[in-house]
Length: 391
Image (cartoon, rainbow, N blue to C red):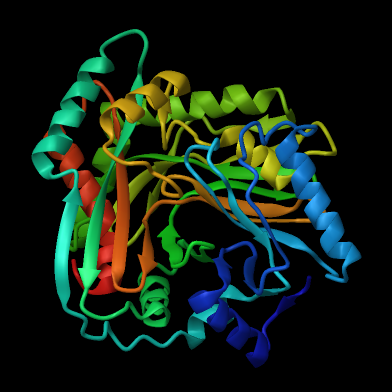
């Protein structure tokens, strides 16, 4: 598919942002509408090129092409727990579009008035802090170095949420993020403004940019710069970040002909946070690799679960009073040639009518404190709350 900038294509993208699949990226932005077929196969062992998940993806892409879809593409979301059903589909129509052209045409009129009937934290602050305290104690053992704990916020509004206006606000407030909208088969939408690229692949080359370690930004320029520098010097955050990088190096080495990882992280900013990030690039050793096989190899990274993975998942299941479902999963696309892009499903929410559920998480390591992790997750929730005009 060629990248299009025509007025009709940009309108197609605007429609997809409200009701179809929409994925806006600095690399390639994709809009899609309609559904040729759904793919619910769990992504468990999706990194195995001869496994069931990869077989089903190839089969559905081939069938779509046979049925007349010229450039079939798989789009959608994969949950945090890859044993659960995927939320993927092959759209009937899709177009790449120019992100800059689309951003220039986005018109925001502020959030239309919509009274909040109820706002509920899950869990509430005392319980979340107790969870964090237990996790901190667990990281003192040799079985667990880091665990990511999350919390939700449930909102009930007087009127159904205006998805078009919400997406416009998200895009305007987070112009450098990966903005996405995914229609869900059970109704409603998954949408957000993720700052974190899990995997981009083109031909045999791939790129990933994991984030771990964060600090709140400041409206004062000098204090803001100081907050970024303090994050870069933070032993706690550098330790948390290095755990992620070491884990990715371990899993990528066996599948790579070439792998380049910088020795030091860099600072990345969103509208509300500083992050530590490390840009990683490489080239796969096997020509059959594709964007989904590599994404499944990496997902979930220690930035979303913890390290070691198995121990972290056990701790999450023990402490979190809910299923993450698609939160903390991945969103993106993969075409018939294996090219594609997947981002981590954070700074996000689910919207169905007048009901909204928001998600945020934080990495817990030995130097964490319950108060700071509650504040950090609150700052992360603000990306979505700002779009609703609720921060």
